Length: 382
Ligand SMILES: Cc1cc2nc3c(=O)[nH]c(=O)nc-3n(C[C@H](O)[C@H](O)[C@H](O)COP(=O)(O)OP(=O)(O)OC[C@H]3O[C@@H](n4cnc5c(N)ncnc54)[C@H](O)[C@@H]3O)c2cc1C
Image 1 (cartoon, rainbow, N blue to C red):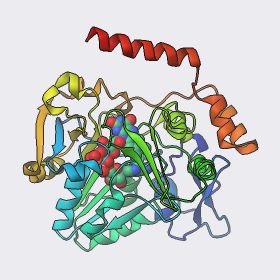
Image 2 (image 1 turned 135 degrees about the vertical axis):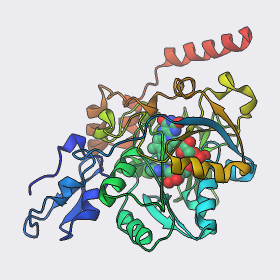
Image 3 (image 1 turned 60 degrees about the horizontal axis):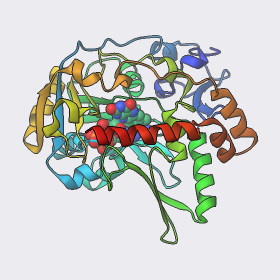
Image 4 (image 1 turned 90 degrees about the vertical axis):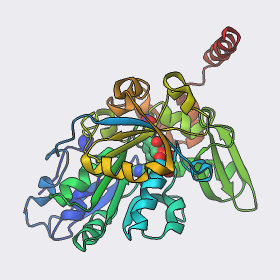
Protein backbone atom coordinates (compact mmCIF):
# COMPACT_ATOMS: atom_id res chain seq x y z
CA UNK A 1 0.00 0.00 0.00
CA UNK A 2 1.58 3.30 -1.05
CA UNK A 3 -1.03 5.83 0.02
CA UNK A 4 -4.52 5.81 1.50
CA UNK A 5 -6.17 8.89 0.04
CA UNK A 6 -5.12 11.96 -1.97
CA UNK A 7 -3.05 14.36 0.11
CA UNK A 8 -5.37 17.38 -0.27
CA UNK A 9 -8.41 15.33 0.79
CA UNK A 10 -6.89 13.77 3.94
CA UNK A 11 -8.31 15.49 7.05
CA UNK A 12 -5.78 13.89 9.43
CA UNK A 13 -8.58 12.20 11.37
CA UNK A 14 -6.39 9.26 12.52
CA UNK A 15 -8.98 6.55 11.61
CA UNK A 16 -6.34 4.63 9.59
CA UNK A 17 -3.74 5.02 12.37
CA UNK A 18 -6.17 3.55 14.93
CA UNK A 19 -7.41 0.74 12.68
CA UNK A 20 -4.17 -0.69 11.25
CA UNK A 21 -3.83 -4.26 12.60
CA UNK A 22 -0.04 -4.17 12.12
CA UNK A 23 0.51 -0.71 13.66
CA UNK A 24 2.42 0.21 10.54
CA UNK A 25 0.92 3.69 10.12
CA UNK A 26 2.53 6.69 11.76
CA UNK A 27 1.32 10.30 11.54
CA UNK A 28 4.06 12.58 10.19
CA UNK A 29 3.96 16.39 9.82
CA UNK A 30 4.33 17.94 6.36
CA UNK A 31 6.16 21.24 5.85
CA UNK A 32 3.02 23.15 7.00
CA UNK A 33 2.85 21.15 10.25
CA UNK A 34 -0.29 19.12 9.44
CA UNK A 35 -0.13 15.40 10.20
CA UNK A 36 -0.55 12.79 7.45
CA UNK A 37 -0.41 8.99 7.59
CA UNK A 38 2.81 7.37 6.50
CA UNK A 39 2.83 3.63 5.84
CA UNK A 40 5.76 1.42 6.70
CA UNK A 41 5.75 -0.77 3.56
CA UNK A 42 7.99 -3.37 5.20
CA UNK A 43 5.28 -4.11 7.76
CA UNK A 44 2.17 -3.45 5.59
CA UNK A 45 0.24 -6.63 4.65
CA UNK A 46 -2.00 -4.83 2.12
CA UNK A 47 -5.18 -5.77 4.03
CA UNK A 48 -6.93 -2.57 2.86
CA UNK A 49 -8.41 -1.78 6.31
CA UNK A 50 -6.92 1.74 6.28
CA UNK A 51 -8.86 2.54 3.11
CA UNK A 52 -12.06 0.91 4.39
CA UNK A 53 -12.05 3.13 7.52
CA UNK A 54 -11.04 6.33 5.70
CA UNK A 55 -14.09 8.64 5.97
CA UNK A 56 -13.20 10.32 2.68
CA UNK A 57 -13.43 6.98 0.85
CA UNK A 58 -16.23 5.39 2.92
CA UNK A 59 -18.78 8.05 3.69
CA UNK A 60 -20.95 7.49 6.76
CA UNK A 61 -24.58 8.54 6.26
CA UNK A 62 -25.77 11.65 8.11
CA UNK A 63 -29.10 12.35 9.84
CA UNK A 64 -31.75 14.48 8.16
CA UNK A 65 -32.11 18.04 9.56
CA UNK A 66 -33.61 17.99 13.07
CA UNK A 67 -34.62 20.54 15.70
CA UNK A 68 -32.52 23.56 16.61
CA UNK A 69 -32.37 25.45 19.91
CA UNK A 70 -30.90 28.61 21.38
CA UNK A 71 -29.35 27.48 24.68
CA UNK A 72 -27.70 29.11 27.68
CA UNK A 73 -26.19 27.19 30.61
CA UNK A 74 -27.82 28.50 33.82
CA UNK A 75 -24.39 28.57 35.49
CA UNK A 76 -22.64 31.83 34.54
CA UNK A 77 -19.43 30.48 36.03
CA UNK A 78 -19.39 27.53 33.59
CA UNK A 79 -20.45 29.71 30.69
CA UNK A 80 -17.52 32.06 31.34
CA UNK A 81 -15.06 29.20 30.71
CA UNK A 82 -16.89 28.06 27.55
CA UNK A 83 -16.77 29.56 24.06
CA UNK A 84 -20.48 30.09 23.62
CA UNK A 85 -23.38 29.00 25.86
CA UNK A 86 -21.54 26.33 27.88
CA UNK A 87 -23.62 23.44 26.56
CA UNK A 88 -20.69 21.08 26.01
CA UNK A 89 -20.02 21.24 29.78
CA UNK A 90 -23.63 20.21 30.53
CA UNK A 91 -23.43 17.22 28.18
CA UNK A 92 -20.09 16.20 29.70
CA UNK A 93 -21.30 16.58 33.32
CA UNK A 94 -24.29 14.37 32.53
CA UNK A 95 -22.17 11.58 31.00
CA UNK A 96 -19.60 11.71 33.83
CA UNK A 97 -22.39 11.58 36.44
CA UNK A 98 -23.39 8.27 34.84
CA UNK A 99 -19.87 6.92 35.32
CA UNK A 100 -19.08 7.55 31.66
CA UNK A 101 -16.09 8.92 29.75
CA UNK A 102 -15.83 12.19 27.80
CA UNK A 103 -13.34 12.73 24.96
CA UNK A 104 -12.43 16.21 23.74
CA UNK A 105 -9.57 18.57 22.87
CA UNK A 106 -7.17 19.87 25.54
CA UNK A 107 -3.81 21.67 25.72
CA UNK A 108 -0.84 19.59 26.85
CA UNK A 109 1.99 21.07 28.95
CA UNK A 110 3.70 22.47 25.83
CA UNK A 111 0.43 24.04 24.59
CA UNK A 112 -0.02 21.50 21.79
CA UNK A 113 -3.67 20.55 21.25
CA UNK A 114 -4.48 16.84 21.71
CA UNK A 115 -7.60 14.77 22.32
CA UNK A 116 -7.94 13.09 25.69
CA UNK A 117 -10.54 11.18 27.68
CA UNK A 118 -11.71 12.25 31.14
CA UNK A 119 -13.79 10.51 33.79
CA UNK A 120 -13.39 13.03 36.59
CA UNK A 121 -15.47 16.22 36.71
CA UNK A 122 -12.44 18.13 38.03
CA UNK A 123 -10.76 17.60 34.65
CA UNK A 124 -13.63 19.08 32.64
CA UNK A 125 -12.03 22.55 32.50
CA UNK A 126 -9.24 21.10 30.32
CA UNK A 127 -11.76 20.29 27.56
CA UNK A 128 -13.85 23.45 27.83
CA UNK A 129 -13.31 26.28 25.36
CA UNK A 130 -12.33 26.33 21.69
CA UNK A 131 -8.70 25.76 20.77
CA UNK A 132 -8.08 27.11 17.30
CA UNK A 133 -5.46 24.54 16.29
CA UNK A 134 -5.96 21.09 14.76
CA UNK A 135 -6.20 18.61 17.62
CA UNK A 136 -4.17 15.37 17.55
CA UNK A 137 -6.53 12.40 17.96
CA UNK A 138 -3.77 9.92 18.87
CA UNK A 139 -5.19 6.54 19.89
CA UNK A 140 -8.37 8.00 21.47
CA UNK A 141 -10.64 6.14 18.98
CA UNK A 142 -9.20 2.85 20.25
CA UNK A 143 -9.59 4.00 23.85
CA UNK A 144 -13.22 4.98 23.17
CA UNK A 145 -13.89 1.55 21.64
CA UNK A 146 -12.56 -0.19 24.74
CA UNK A 147 -14.89 1.79 27.00
CA UNK A 148 -17.82 1.17 24.64
CA UNK A 149 -17.15 -2.58 24.55
CA UNK A 150 -17.04 -2.55 28.36
CA UNK A 151 -20.57 -1.11 28.30
CA UNK A 152 -19.65 2.37 29.56
CA UNK A 153 -21.25 5.57 28.25
CA UNK A 154 -18.96 7.60 25.99
CA UNK A 155 -19.37 11.19 24.81
CA UNK A 156 -16.95 11.97 21.96
CA UNK A 157 -16.61 15.64 21.03
CA UNK A 158 -14.67 16.93 18.03
CA UNK A 159 -14.72 18.50 14.60
CA UNK A 160 -17.07 16.95 12.02
CA UNK A 161 -14.14 15.16 10.31
CA UNK A 162 -12.99 13.68 13.63
CA UNK A 163 -16.49 12.33 14.29
CA UNK A 164 -16.60 10.90 10.72
CA UNK A 165 -13.26 9.19 11.44
CA UNK A 166 -14.48 7.76 14.74
CA UNK A 167 -17.65 6.36 13.16
CA UNK A 168 -15.91 4.71 10.22
CA UNK A 169 -13.25 3.35 12.60
CA UNK A 170 -15.91 1.82 14.89
CA UNK A 171 -17.85 0.48 11.90
CA UNK A 172 -20.94 -0.34 13.97
CA UNK A 173 -23.52 1.46 16.11
CA UNK A 174 -23.08 1.56 19.86
CA UNK A 175 -26.14 2.41 21.94
CA UNK A 176 -23.83 3.80 24.67
CA UNK A 177 -22.00 6.26 22.35
CA UNK A 178 -23.00 9.90 21.90
CA UNK A 179 -21.16 11.90 19.26
CA UNK A 180 -21.10 15.70 19.46
CA UNK A 181 -19.47 17.84 16.81
CA UNK A 182 -19.02 21.58 16.43
CA UNK A 183 -19.78 23.83 13.51
CA UNK A 184 -16.22 24.18 12.26
CA UNK A 185 -14.70 27.08 10.34
CA UNK A 186 -11.61 24.93 9.62
CA UNK A 187 -8.55 23.94 11.65
CA UNK A 188 -5.31 25.99 11.75
CA UNK A 189 -1.84 24.50 11.37
CA UNK A 190 -0.09 23.32 14.58
CA UNK A 191 3.21 24.62 13.12
CA UNK A 192 1.84 28.14 12.63
CA UNK A 193 0.51 27.99 16.21
CA UNK A 194 3.96 27.05 17.51
CA UNK A 195 5.57 29.85 15.47
CA UNK A 196 3.03 32.33 16.88
CA UNK A 197 3.86 31.16 20.43
CA UNK A 198 7.59 31.66 19.77
CA UNK A 199 6.91 35.16 18.44
CA UNK A 200 4.75 36.22 21.40
CA UNK A 201 7.06 34.65 24.01
CA UNK A 202 9.92 36.60 22.48
CA UNK A 203 7.94 39.81 22.59
CA UNK A 204 6.84 39.32 26.24
CA UNK A 205 10.12 37.79 27.38
CA UNK A 206 8.50 34.89 29.23
CA UNK A 207 7.17 31.39 28.60
CA UNK A 208 3.45 31.00 27.86
CA UNK A 209 1.66 28.71 30.35
CA UNK A 210 -2.01 29.08 29.53
CA UNK A 211 -4.03 30.16 26.50
CA UNK A 212 -7.64 31.27 26.34
CA UNK A 213 -8.77 31.81 22.78
CA UNK A 214 -12.18 33.06 23.83
CA UNK A 215 -11.82 35.26 26.90
CA UNK A 216 -15.25 36.80 27.49
CA UNK A 217 -14.25 39.34 30.16
CA UNK A 218 -15.28 42.15 27.81
CA UNK A 219 -18.20 40.27 26.23
CA UNK A 220 -18.85 37.27 23.99
CA UNK A 221 -19.22 39.10 20.69
CA UNK A 222 -15.91 40.96 20.94
CA UNK A 223 -13.95 38.26 22.69
CA UNK A 224 -10.29 38.58 23.59
CA UNK A 225 -7.34 36.23 23.16
CA UNK A 226 -5.55 35.89 26.49
CA UNK A 227 -2.16 34.35 27.21
CA UNK A 228 -0.76 33.86 30.71
CA UNK A 229 3.03 33.61 31.05
CA UNK A 230 5.42 32.69 33.80
CA UNK A 231 6.80 35.63 35.82
CA UNK A 232 3.10 36.62 36.35
CA UNK A 233 2.95 38.23 32.91
CA UNK A 234 -0.21 38.28 30.81
CA UNK A 235 -1.23 39.47 27.36
CA UNK A 236 -4.77 40.14 26.13
CA UNK A 237 -5.96 41.42 22.79
CA UNK A 238 -9.33 41.69 21.01
CA UNK A 239 -9.66 38.73 18.61
CA UNK A 240 -9.82 40.98 15.56
CA UNK A 241 -6.46 42.60 16.44
CA UNK A 242 -4.66 39.40 17.42
CA UNK A 243 -2.30 38.33 14.63
CA UNK A 244 -2.91 34.56 15.01
CA UNK A 245 -6.70 35.00 15.01
CA UNK A 246 -6.54 37.39 12.04
CA UNK A 247 -4.70 34.81 9.94
CA UNK A 248 -7.10 32.07 11.09
CA UNK A 249 -10.23 34.08 10.27
CA UNK A 250 -8.76 35.05 6.88
CA UNK A 251 -8.27 31.28 6.22
CA UNK A 252 -4.52 31.70 5.69
CA UNK A 253 -3.40 28.49 7.37
CA UNK A 254 -6.26 26.03 7.49
CA UNK A 255 -5.61 22.39 6.63
CA UNK A 256 -5.79 21.92 2.82
CA UNK A 257 -8.79 19.54 3.20
CA UNK A 258 -10.74 22.29 5.05
CA UNK A 259 -11.10 24.24 1.80
CA UNK A 260 -13.26 21.39 0.46
CA UNK A 261 -14.42 19.70 3.65
CA UNK A 262 -15.82 16.20 3.11
CA UNK A 263 -17.71 16.22 6.44
CA UNK A 264 -19.52 19.52 6.07
CA UNK A 265 -23.22 19.02 5.53
CA UNK A 266 -26.58 19.88 7.00
CA UNK A 267 -27.07 16.10 7.30
CA UNK A 268 -24.88 15.84 10.37
CA UNK A 269 -23.20 12.58 11.38
CA UNK A 270 -23.16 13.49 15.08
CA UNK A 271 -26.06 13.12 17.49
CA UNK A 272 -25.66 16.74 18.60
CA UNK A 273 -23.97 19.75 16.95
CA UNK A 274 -22.84 22.82 18.91
CA UNK A 275 -22.13 26.27 17.54
CA UNK A 276 -21.99 29.91 18.48
CA UNK A 277 -25.43 31.39 17.97
CA UNK A 278 -24.24 34.34 15.89
CA UNK A 279 -27.16 36.62 15.06
CA UNK A 280 -29.17 35.66 18.18
CA UNK A 281 -29.59 39.34 19.09
CA UNK A 282 -31.47 39.81 15.81
CA UNK A 283 -33.65 36.67 15.95
CA UNK A 284 -34.37 36.28 19.68
CA UNK A 285 -32.91 39.28 21.54
CA UNK A 286 -34.19 37.90 24.88
CA UNK A 287 -31.52 35.16 24.50
CA UNK A 288 -28.69 37.67 24.07
CA UNK A 289 -26.82 38.92 27.14
CA UNK A 290 -23.34 39.07 25.54
CA UNK A 291 -22.11 36.25 27.79
CA UNK A 292 -22.53 33.53 25.14
CA UNK A 293 -25.44 31.72 23.53
CA UNK A 294 -25.13 28.32 21.86
CA UNK A 295 -26.91 27.09 18.80
CA UNK A 296 -27.67 23.42 19.47
CA UNK A 297 -28.70 21.07 16.68
CA UNK A 298 -30.50 17.92 17.77
CA UNK A 299 -29.68 15.50 14.97
CA UNK A 300 -30.74 12.06 16.23
CA UNK A 301 -33.06 10.40 18.75
CA UNK A 302 -30.06 9.82 21.04
CA UNK A 303 -29.25 13.51 20.78
CA UNK A 304 -32.86 14.40 21.63
CA UNK A 305 -32.76 12.24 24.76
CA UNK A 306 -29.51 13.77 25.99
CA UNK A 307 -30.70 17.34 25.37
CA UNK A 308 -33.89 16.47 27.26
CA UNK A 309 -31.83 15.12 30.16
CA UNK A 310 -29.90 18.41 30.58
CA UNK A 311 -32.83 20.73 29.82
CA UNK A 312 -33.47 21.73 33.45
CA UNK A 313 -29.93 23.12 33.65
CA UNK A 314 -30.25 25.53 30.73
CA UNK A 315 -32.49 28.25 29.35
CA UNK A 316 -33.56 27.09 25.91
CA UNK A 317 -35.87 27.94 23.07
CA UNK A 318 -36.71 26.09 19.87
CA UNK A 319 -35.68 28.13 16.82
CA UNK A 320 -36.05 27.92 13.09
CA UNK A 321 -32.93 26.08 11.89
CA UNK A 322 -32.68 27.85 8.53
CA UNK A 323 -32.92 31.34 10.06
CA UNK A 324 -30.28 30.37 12.63
CA UNK A 325 -27.84 28.95 10.08
CA UNK A 326 -28.08 32.03 7.88
CA UNK A 327 -25.66 33.66 10.36
CA UNK A 328 -23.34 30.66 10.43
CA UNK A 329 -22.31 29.62 6.89
CA UNK A 330 -19.45 27.48 8.29
CA UNK A 331 -22.12 24.87 9.06
CA UNK A 332 -22.53 24.03 5.38
CA UNK A 333 -19.88 25.90 3.34
CA UNK A 334 -16.13 25.29 3.29
CA UNK A 335 -13.73 28.19 3.79
CA UNK A 336 -12.34 29.82 0.63
CA UNK A 337 -8.65 29.38 -0.05
CA UNK A 338 -6.92 32.78 -0.10
CA UNK A 339 -4.65 33.63 -3.03
CA UNK A 340 -1.74 34.45 -0.70
CA UNK A 341 -1.83 31.19 1.32
CA UNK A 342 1.23 29.75 -0.47
CA UNK A 343 3.12 33.04 -0.09
CA UNK A 344 2.38 33.10 3.64
CA UNK A 345 3.62 29.53 4.14
CA UNK A 346 6.80 30.20 2.14
CA UNK A 347 7.58 33.30 4.20
CA UNK A 348 6.81 31.48 7.46
CA UNK A 349 9.38 28.79 6.69
CA UNK A 350 11.96 31.17 5.22
CA UNK A 351 11.67 34.25 7.45
CA UNK A 352 9.42 34.47 10.55
CA UNK A 353 5.82 34.40 11.73
CA UNK A 354 5.80 38.16 12.26
CA UNK A 355 6.97 39.01 8.74
CA UNK A 356 4.79 36.36 7.11
CA UNK A 357 1.63 37.43 8.90
CA UNK A 358 2.18 41.19 8.64
CA UNK A 359 2.68 40.93 4.89
CA UNK A 360 -0.35 38.74 4.37
CA UNK A 361 -3.22 39.69 6.67
CA UNK A 362 -5.59 42.38 5.66
CA UNK A 363 -4.12 45.32 7.53
CA UNK A 364 -5.07 47.94 5.04
CA UNK A 365 -5.20 51.37 6.72
CA UNK A 366 -7.96 52.71 4.47
CA UNK A 367 -10.08 49.61 5.13
CA UNK A 368 -9.60 50.01 8.89
CA UNK A 369 -10.68 53.67 8.72
CA UNK A 370 -13.72 52.78 6.57
CA UNK A 371 -14.74 50.12 9.11
CA UNK A 372 -14.37 52.59 11.98
CA UNK A 373 -16.54 55.14 10.15
CA UNK A 374 -19.11 52.43 9.31
CA UNK A 375 -19.28 51.34 12.99
CA UNK A 376 -19.62 54.99 14.09
CA UNK A 377 -22.42 55.67 11.57
CA UNK A 378 -24.27 52.49 12.59
CA UNK A 379 -24.19 53.65 16.23
CA UNK A 380 -25.48 57.10 15.25
CA UNK A 381 -28.32 55.60 13.14
CA UNK A 382 -29.35 53.25 16.01
C1 LIG B 1 -11.41 25.04 15.18
C2 LIG B 1 -12.80 25.47 15.57
C3 LIG B 1 -13.57 26.19 14.66
C4 LIG B 1 -14.88 26.58 15.00
N1 LIG B 1 -15.63 27.27 14.08
C5 LIG B 1 -16.87 27.66 14.40
C6 LIG B 1 -17.69 28.39 13.47
O1 LIG B 1 -17.25 28.71 12.35
N2 LIG B 1 -18.97 28.73 13.83
C7 LIG B 1 -19.46 28.39 15.06
O2 LIG B 1 -20.61 28.72 15.35
N3 LIG B 1 -18.73 27.69 15.95
C8 LIG B 1 -17.45 27.33 15.67
N4 LIG B 1 -16.72 26.61 16.57
C9 LIG B 1 -17.39 26.07 17.77
C10 LIG B 1 -17.59 27.05 18.91
O3 LIG B 1 -16.43 27.87 19.04
C11 LIG B 1 -17.85 26.34 20.25
O4 LIG B 1 -16.90 25.31 20.43
C12 LIG B 1 -19.19 25.71 20.33
O5 LIG B 1 -20.16 26.72 20.20
C13 LIG B 1 -19.41 24.99 21.67
O6 LIG B 1 -19.38 25.90 22.69
P1 LIG B 1 -19.75 25.55 24.20
O7 LIG B 1 -19.77 26.85 24.92
O8 LIG B 1 -20.97 24.69 24.29
O9 LIG B 1 -18.60 24.62 24.71
P2 LIG B 1 -17.01 24.81 24.76
O10 LIG B 1 -16.60 24.48 26.14
O11 LIG B 1 -16.54 26.07 24.21
O12 LIG B 1 -16.63 23.65 23.77
C14 LIG B 1 -15.63 22.81 24.03
C15 LIG B 1 -15.68 21.65 23.08
O13 LIG B 1 -15.04 22.00 21.85
C16 LIG B 1 -14.10 20.99 21.56
N5 LIG B 1 -12.92 21.57 20.91
C17 LIG B 1 -12.22 22.64 21.31
N6 LIG B 1 -11.17 22.84 20.50
C18 LIG B 1 -11.19 21.84 19.59
C19 LIG B 1 -10.34 21.45 18.53
N7 LIG B 1 -9.25 22.15 18.20
N8 LIG B 1 -10.67 20.36 17.82
C20 LIG B 1 -11.74 19.62 18.13
N9 LIG B 1 -12.60 19.93 19.14
C21 LIG B 1 -12.32 21.02 19.86
C22 LIG B 1 -13.66 20.44 22.92
O14 LIG B 1 -13.30 19.12 22.76
C23 LIG B 1 -14.94 20.52 23.71
O15 LIG B 1 -15.65 19.38 23.52
C24 LIG B 1 -15.41 26.24 16.28
C25 LIG B 1 -14.62 25.54 17.19
C26 LIG B 1 -13.32 25.15 16.85
C27 LIG B 1 -12.49 24.38 17.85
